[in-house]
Amino acid sequence: MATAAEPDPSTDPGWQPARILVTRAAMGFAHGRRIAETAAARGIEVVELSGDRLILNLPEDPRRAYVAAKRTLAVVVAPPSKRRLQPIAPSADWRMDLAEGCPAHCSYCYLAGSLKGPPITRAYANLEEIFDALPGYLGAGTITSRSRDREHEGTTFEASCYTDPLALEPITGSLSAAIRYFSAWEAPVQLRFTSKFADVAPLLSIAHGGRTRMRASVNPGAFARFEGGTAPVAARLAALRRMALAGYPVGLTIAPIIAAAGWQAAYGGLIEDAAAALAEISALDLSIELITHRFTPGSKAVLESWYPGSALDMSEVNRTTKRTKFGSEKQVYDAATMRALRDFFEARIAAELPAARILYWT
Ligand code: SF4
Image 1 (cartoon, rainbow, N blue to C red):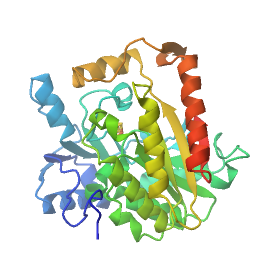
Image 2: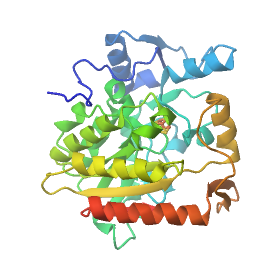
Image 3: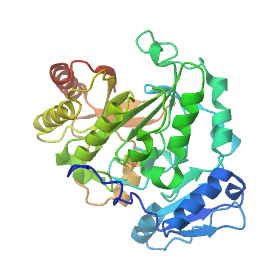
Image 4: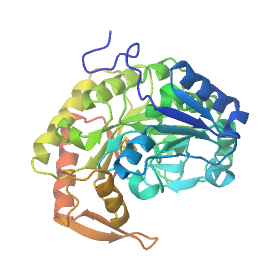
């Protein structure tokens, strides 16, 4: 029986887009047709386009256009350029995309600075072509493939860089397909995904072979106002427990760490809640990733237009400018704030979750 904090899969429909646009090319793939059928069966309007250009017809008013875009799922074909994988330090060797875009409304979302145009979600229909490209990257990465500490993870592929794949799963089924693909792949490989959603029911019975690591992306409940449209944190932790009990390696992505007033008590409580949620699981394989809040001038401008009046601090207080190797700038916490945060997290995790491996701090 589902607990109060846990969504009941039999009654929780998950994300329900207002409409689905399917390009002509996407209808040429069985997976694209399946997504259209699933959506239609759920009563969602399915628009089969006569060509491959997405005609969005969004309202002129920016507010309404944002809402309409966030409620639109496009089913498209990933072109060859998208099927050439990019490195994705420090999480994994390679980034693999099952989709781009996310229906949630997080006021710090990093996608705001990464994806251009209206914030619709695009799910890829040509999964087999995406999977067919993966063996070419075996052993060729620079993170787990070359790390003494993480080499046992094999070649790693991160599916959450440009989307939250679990949010889309009830309609697309793409994540389940990827888990099955990795399970059948006879090589030292691992699929990774992180999520702010909680409906893991479709994943629990998959023969995953231990080749997929799910991380729950979490922040204290006190910061829930920054994470509109996501599952409650308690539900995410409960979902992670269910995945661990189903034998999946699991993890916590504590992100973005926000040094707002009261952060010590808030994050201390979060770590305690995580420890309680993951208690008494035999052979628990738990990793932790720690990512501090950062933003670029571009992402800040987009986020301020999407979420005017958000209480999220994107001022220059406690910040310093960091230049990336590509020459762009981002605002990160200054050295003193970073030190205080890092010392706190390392100490509290060692005390509350001693079996966890911290993969990185950034
Ligand atoms: Fe962005 Fe993740 Fe929030 Fe989706 S769940 S809006 S990808 S931060």
